[in-house]
Image (tube, rainbow, N blue to C red; front, side, top):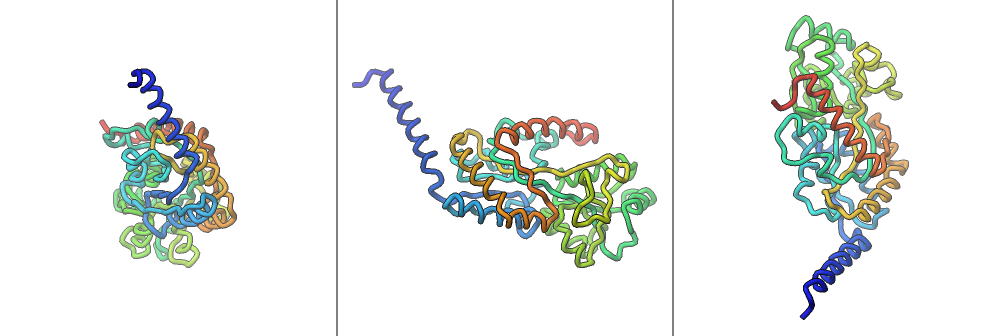
Length: 319
């Protein structure tokens, strides 16, 4: 019979050897990436190109799974129950860092996720139907002042970056807007095209509709004007002092082997550098925004702090 100490030592060695073997053989089956938005939108379309690129590099299929709703936070939440083996990953949009301030959750986005890579950032804007009497952003605010609560705007969901930023805009401009949440931007854009809402704040899923003359772009939210839509002023230009780009990336369940994280990071970095991914981002007026695993984790920690301050200022935190 083995002495207890020797048995424990051999057990630890066997566990370590198994973990090393799993990392060395990774990946040996399909990888699933969950995204928090509906098919066909400005998140889904680039991710499918990215997945094709990554599959060629990793030698295994990379499958996109859509989990829309709840402001895009469902994939990150599902990581709390996923195996930390590198085969189930999640896109993390900015609303994930608001969760613990606006609802009661039993996990922390900074402490309970492993950060793999930062990928890109959204371009945001406000659109109205092309035949709307509202011609520009100043006209939008003037209408809201003259008609408190009557100006409706759609977003891909409550507590999304679009919702929170529109409430910041309303607060700074001293107007009252009415928010109409949808499950994703494909729904919200169809709603504004169909005139079920008067406006939509969204990522550039609106770009094809603006180019086709169905929607009018009133403003974008970057630090500078959009290269594709240079006639639309920024909120910063309009004196509102708001700049919003909302970087996003990929995470794994907490406890994933660092060697697996490194393998994923290296493959994904190659995938995002391919011309077809850059081109599909450009189609939606988005830019690559690479962050290493360490930089992305540090950014997440700082973002959680800054989001807390914003939400407290708007009175949107859980009491």
